[in-house]
Amino acid sequence: MAKKDRAGAGPELVSKIAVKNYVGKSPWHLAFLRLTRNKIAFASLLIVLLYIVAAIVTRFNVFGIQTAAATHDYDNRYVGFLSRGLHMFHVFGSDNFGRDVLSRAILGSQVSLFLGFTSGLIMIPIAIVVGAIAGYYGGILDDVAMYVMSVIVAIPGILIILSLVQIVGRSFWTIALAFAITGWVGLARVIRGSFIQSREFEYVLAAHTLGASDFRIIFKHILPNSMHFVIIRFVLNFVGVIKSEVFLAYIGLSIIGASTWGNMIDESKQEIIAGNWQNLTAASVFMIVFLVCLNLLGDAIRDALDPKLKNL
Image (cartoon, rainbow, N blue to C red; front, side):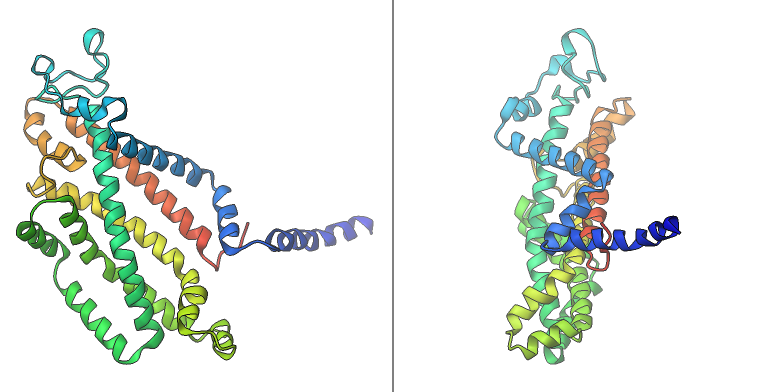
C-alpha cells in the first residue's frame, strides 16, 4: 500500500517542481533556462560567438589579419594545405597572389556578419511595424499594407537586388538595403497573421477593458508572443543574405575590393582548373560551418521563445 502511495505521489511531486520552477521568473528568464538545457544549441552559440569575435578582431586588424589577407607575396603563390617548413603558417595555403587564404576567410566573416546583421536590423523594424498595424487594426490599413507587400512579392527579389546594385553601385550599404527591401515582406505577413489571431484572445480583451493603450497592447502584450517568429525569420534572412552575396559575387556584382566568401569562391573558378582548391575550400568550410550553427541556434531560440512550449 505504501508503494502505491509513493507511486501515486510521483506526478504530483513533478507538478509541484514544475510550478516552482516557473514562480517569480519572467518569460525571458524561462526562455533562457530552456535554451541552456539544449547542448547542441549551446555549442552552436559558442561557434557563432567565435565568428563574431573574429569579425570584430579583423575590423581592428588585431594579429595583423587584414595585413596578411592583403599582402601580395608572389614568391609564395599557390602554397598547398598545411605546408611544412617555411610556409607552415599557411594553414589553408595561399592564392594566386600569394595572399594567405585563412586570413582572407576570417576577413570574409566580417563582411558576411555585418551584412547579415545590417540588413536584419533594417528589415525587422519595418516588418514589425507594418505587420502589427495591419493585423491589429485591419480595415483600410490592412488593405494598403497587403497591396504593398503583394507588389514587392510579385517582383523577383533577385531582380530588385540587381537593379539597386546596378543603379546605386556595389557598396556595402547598397547591398544591405537591397536585402532588407526584399526580406521584410515574409516576416510582416507572419506577424500580421499572429496579430489577427491574438487580438481576440482573452488577455488582449482584458487589457482593453482595463484601459490599456493600443501601443501598450501591441508592444507589451501581443508582440512578445510573436518574437519566436521574428527570431527564426531573422536567422533565415541572415542565411539568405550570405547565400545571395555568394551569388552576386559569382556574377561579378558583390562588394568591390572586399575579401568576402563570395569573392573567394568567384576567384576560385579559374584556380580550380589548375588544381588549386585553396580559396574554394576555405570559403566553403567557413560558410557551411557558420550557416549550420546559425540554423541550429535559430531553431533552439525559436523553441525557447515559443509560448506554447513550456517544458523545462
